[in-house]
Length: 417
Image 1 (cartoon, rainbow, N blue to C red):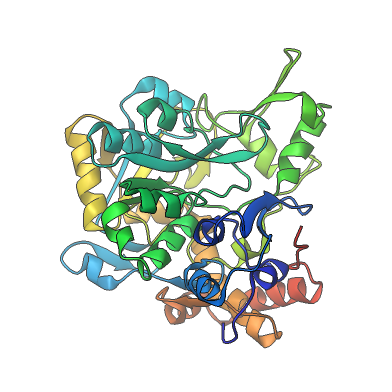
Image 2: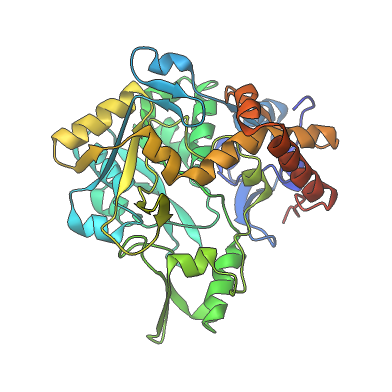
């Protein structure tokens, strides 16, 4: 990104991720996150921040700048894998709390670690998200200071949220916190740590998922509509959980309920919705949380070399990427908060093959922005030259052409409100 860019332009050109760090840095009186007509969480500029604040926001915004992890964090142990990034330790596991394991999206790994951090006194609060109490198809940012509050956010949220909107206030308060959020939210915290020395001391743990991208709020509305349930009649909207992967469940104020399987929701051709993820997710260099301390994706059951989604006891992977992450997983295991079993990189390759394709095709998709005269994010430290080698010239060209077609159709552009 060679020229300074405004918040309005970041949104308009499809580069906003909706994390909320800009609201936190500027203050809600100047910049406030809200759902737009496009169905995404976006900053609404009430009053223009001053130049100093805007410069800092641009330095931190993960939509326009990311710096990948340092090889130094695995210099003494582990590997900097071409695709998967830093791995100090790798295991498959789950929460030892059977109720939490059942209620969670997978094995309850992130929630178990969040609860453990509070119970052990390592942090004062956990920053995460959960279903909105007032609008169940939407998602609220939550600052939890009790284990029960952390547990209340145990299930997946496939939709926009602004989990970082409280970060600066918590830093000002002197709170020591863990952030449980998407990879791009974690990247925003790492960016913030480069301009705010308090981050290193007050945000010692960053825990994330593998992310498939953020769909709009319209997806949930279409699923409810599939059951002929208007938005104002929805009393509960659960994407996953109560099993693994668990059904997508809609409940109404008058006592009706409807469920769809994971495969029906995300892999069926005969439903009136698509996975309408935001453009910035399509050019993401790090959907696997390389900048986290621990990444906790699903540890899918494999049959004949392919992941299946039949109901089973939930399981995650624990990918410890830093010394802090390695120590946390080991301590949670020793104290009985989680259970783990061996897992290999070769199994990871097969289990999350979709993320391999996303990773190695990414440089081509980003490159096209500059070639087409669009603002181009600056992504450093993600081994882009190696990705181009791995994908090969034919697939690299196809990825570039696909991105070019989207841009020329203006599919990446968004309204501001």
